[in-house]
Image (cartoon, rainbow, N blue to C red; front, side, top):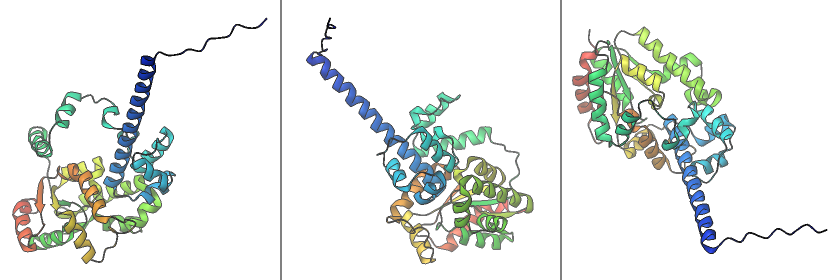
Length: 311
């Protein structure tokens, strides 16, 4: 006896249209998610100051595939995303788009801050710092933060000489401690180990000098614990310049790092500056050096920071 045939289910035209619509919406959500993850990965990498090649090496994700992830073209698996997070030394949730991040215990405050523009965020930070900051903490020096080419070394050397205090470049302390040049160190040991060297260099500088001018590496601000330690112990100054001037200065110094492995160095520099600007704005003071005479910058800086460099 033959089994009864099962009739095919034919959807009405309206149901088929709705099915296509649901499928289109799913594809759109997936595409937005891929773009969001790619943007988060790219932002985390640029804040760390890493090239794609370096991140690919330490994560085990191919450079070609990483480029597709950052452009939002690849549907990356959780396993590969965790490898990127480990290489970047960040929580995996930080690589997810904002709406998918774990809910904060202070969601109302987070929501309020998220809706502020950059100037309003800066004002809010000042108010919160005034209200809740540790006014009793002793700051025994000045730390200069900012991208390479802003003028940190030149200004740091000049104001330290003017006020007769030591000038310490954290990059040099790290190199002395590790026995390796910075680029070589990051390539060999990866982000996590490099950040450990960086924090150790800062702690030893805090312990070794009573009054000092410190030049921090450009990406130090991306490591919250180390940046908090810097801002607690020193009066921090964001030394600023336009992206064009940043690039021109490092080129004139013979530094090829900003152009190495990049066909668009200025665009890459603008992206890094954009991704780090929120961190840089946490500094106590901003000094703009674009189209300014070095003597004028030194004079302004000495007036602002002098009281932190004298007994």
